[in-house]
Image (cartoon, rainbow, N blue to C red):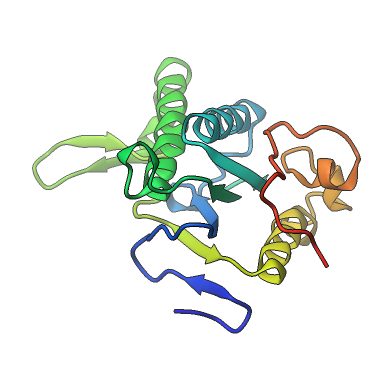
Length: 197
């Protein structure tokens, strides 16, 4: 469904259209604050950097909140390497990496707390979920105004939640590098980002 500002809201399925950026939301299981510790945030940043490099995806903006994260990405070659759904591949790669590291850490250091992530299937199989089930939120964008509005929204998330006074004060975001306040923990690639204004 196309909105007035040139964004396309996905209701269920991710499609990959050449030259469209994607604002993705990663939500923790039951909205638990699983991203509230620096070690977990580092795992997310590591997964984001590696996946962007491996899959030729330009990361334009990102923010990590205690119970969710947002990223704005631009898949450079959606048809490359035989992949038909690079956004789905991207999500899977980031999510699996963080979930594995987090559940392994909990098994070693706090196995009792791991029960909060436990899911038992009807066949008796047990798994532990770090992320909320499903594809999550995927907002596809191609208009410059919508892209820059999304960047501003992402960067101001910590301010709205009173985690920081200014967007650039939150170290778990790309806002610092946009404001010229310091380096970003995750790589930012502006090569294909349309100019604001």
